[in-house]
Each structure stands twice: as C-alpha cells, then as structure tokens.
Length: 613
Image (cartoon, rainbow, N blue to C red):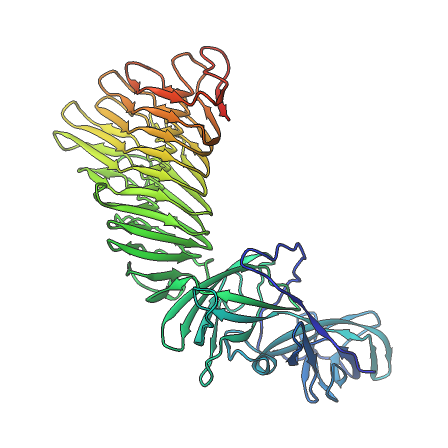
C-alpha cells in the first residue's frame, strides 16, 4: 500500500516561532561521492522507502511528496560510499534496488543519502526544489545476511531542509511585491547565501529550501529586487526545523540603494554610502576592513564581524559626522587592541568624530552589537587621542536589541577615550557630545587597570585625562547624559564611575561630564575602587579634578541601583568619589520625593543605594 507523506506546516510571524523543538543536525549538501567503494563482497539489496521530498505539490496546509522512478540514492557504511540503489516506481513509497560492496554483518547500520545539487541557486518553485536542491537521509539496519543478499530494514527518510513559501508585500503591508530576485542569508545557513531568481515570471510568492546547521532561531536577511528594479530589504527571525513546511508573509522594511557582502570583500577600507546594507553571509569570518560612514548617511548592519588587527588609526567603524546605524542580527565591531602604555594606543569599536552642536550618531533596530575599544579608546564614541584633541558627535540609542560596549582601559565603554598630552604646551581635550539612551539593553564597561597606576574610564561617560606636566595638561569630557528607558548596566574601570566621569590618572589631568538625568529604565551602575556608581570619579588632586554637573533621578524609573567602589564616607553611591569636595566635584543631586530611597550608606560597610517607585 502506498503511504502519503506530508510536510507539517508551521505559520510564523516576525517574532513568532518560539517552539523549543530540537532541530535535527543537518549535513551540508554534497556532490555525489567520488570515493572508491569499499573492497569486499557484492550484495543485492532491496529497500522499502518513504517520506521524502522528491516531487512536491502544495496542498494548502502541507506539501505532498513522492518518489520518481529512476531516483538514485547513495549507500554509506561509515565514511565509505559502498554503492547506489535505484527507485523502481513512482509514489510516496517505493522500493529501491541495487548492489553494494563491502564486508557486512547482521545488525550493521548503513546510511542512505538522497543528494541533488546545492541550495545556493534556486528558481522559487517546488519543481526546482525537487530537481536541484533536495537532500534527505535515512539510517537502516542489516537484519539478515544470506549468501549474496542482504535484508535491510525499511528506510524512513528525513529531509535535511525546511521548505518555506513566502508571500511578499511592500512596506505598507498590503500591496503585493512582485520580484525579480531575492538574496537570502543568515548565520549557519548551509551555503551561506541563497539566490532565488525568476527569469520569466514576476511572482509575489515563492518557495525556497533552506537548511540551517545552527539548530537555533536565527534572523534571516532578504535583499529583494522588485519588478520595477526598486531594492527592498526585509528580515525574519525563525527556527527552521528540518522536514517542516512553513507558509508565511514577508513585509519589506524599507528600500536600499546598494548592498555589500564583506565576506566576499578584499578591500583595504570600505566607504559606506547612504542608504546601504553591509552584511556578512559568513559571519564566522573575521574581517579586518574598517568601515567609513559618510556624514548624514544611513546604513543597515547585518551579522557584520569586523575586528581590527593592525595599527593604522582606523576604528572598526568611523562615522564622519551624523549617521543612522540600523542594527539587525548579531554584529561585532572591534578596534585595534593596542598595547599596554600610552605609546601604543588602540582604536574605538565605533569612532564618531563630529561637531556635537550639529552632528548625532543614532543607533536603532532590533539587532545586537558588540563594540570593543582598544587601549585607551571607547567601545562606542571616541578614539584614544594623543598629540591633539578632538570633538565627537552626540550619541543616541533607540534600539530594542542588546548593545555591549567595552573599553580595554582608560576609555569609557560608551563616551570619550583617553586624552594623552606629552607634547603640547596647553590643555588639550578629547570630548564627546550628549549621550541619550531611550531603549534597549545597554551593557557598558571600562575594563580594570592592568597596572598599579593604570586607572579606568566610566562605563558611560568620559575616559581619562593623562597630562605629563603643568604645561601639558589633558582632559577627557562628555556632555549631558540622559537615560529615558531601557535596561542599563554600566561598570566603571579602576577609580571610574559607572555613569559619569572616568578617573584623573595623575597630576595635570581632568575629567568632566555634564548633567546626569535619569527619567526611566532599569539602571545598575557600579563604580570602580574609590568611585561612585553615578557621579564624579576619584580625582587625583584638588587642582586636577573630576567633575560632573547636577544629577536628577525622576519618578518614571523602574529602578536605580548605584554601587560605590569603597565603603568609605568620602565615596558616595550617587555623587562624589574619593577626595570629595576637593578633587571630586558634583553638582546638586535631586531625587524625586515619590521614590523609595535606601539612602547613602555613609561610613558603614554598605556599598549599594537603591531607588524604586
């Protein structure tokens, strides 16, 4: 009796498909093996087989699948190809016959593989999937050996890809989007990148076979060329389970002018032009290509992995003025690591040079970002500087994903980098504009010092100043810090505030931040040794101090937890660090009267002050 096999259908939305179903481990599509078959006796074999994707028909809520007479499967014993079997008839179930060669015993297992082509180029049809990118496997057991014949258990084939039917719409969500071609990419996707082309028809729906070896929910990027040559992009986050059929809508998020796959690039640097998409089809490849974003440009980042390994002053990304950075997937931007002293400074994960009176770098989108600054540089904000000062743009965070920003030392996690002055007979400044956080999860850290006198920056705020004489002074500064929402974790380096200023590293050095305003969100701010959770860090001396403006905490917060770095009356959880009123100076502190306040622990052993509604 013939058996019918149906792909189970799962309908998913953009943020849906939260099933915990385990995905079977998929093998990459391969060309038929060229290995020499194992040496041994030749046996005749007949196998009953069902459940495969050879010929497909859309039944609305499922896909029916059948074999075709003449289909060939390869037989493997371990890594050796020991023969092939051929289907004798059409149908959802059929018999395969043929011979295999080797030394076999009862209870030995064999693997059957149906292989055809690869996933990387498809035509959007079920016929195309059945004929050129189908992959299924089965494990069978030898139940008896009799002369030159083997008795084999029935083969239950498991498809090694999911098949999805996409129905496309323009950004309004209602107008069908007819397409010429679509490029699809995601981390762990077999083949890294799939191109679906429609040389004749211009459909608004298509089928695609995809296998993802990650076994987890992934975000997929779709680069769509429409019938009128307009370029659209879309994303979809889903766990595609092998052997399942999905039908879903895909609504374009917007248009773009160009797309760049860094995985295929050999550029020395890459200048990002307006309205572009920069992505990596294989984010496991670490790229050493600095990205340069022009003034006023908008760019989408998807699964980018840029890590600088040579010291030529470039950060992983430089935003020369105003910029809008839209994040999807998981992105890594790591500046040059540098050395362990001021003669070998590193570079920022993202450097944002620009006039803060008119330039702002904005981060948005649901994606994640890990940004690392090298020695003295911020994770996000400003490079480490020596010889001359520089101003940097404002930073605004509007995303809904997780941004992790870390400085190796002396720089802020988010904010300014170190300002080192060994040559100019004046006070030089490394400054950044206002820092505003509206949403998302932010984890900002200035790493601890690696030597006795190597102090740290703030988690969010300023790096360190590092002057060399009374005539050669240095200051690291930032503008107003405003937090309106989000889940914020900010950790200062050695003697640096969680939120506020970094430490003044020695005589002739200053750090300075503007007002700190917290209107909402969940905030955990931890200072380094002798520093507050929120406020002005430990200053070196009265003449070379750390200062911040006023601190205001409003009624709209979910919670604020401020942890000081030392149980000492001169170190506050919110306010001043060690040498308060002299080398650590803070403006007025205003806390909404409706909040429950645990209060400053004073000279006791407590380190934490909490505020909740």
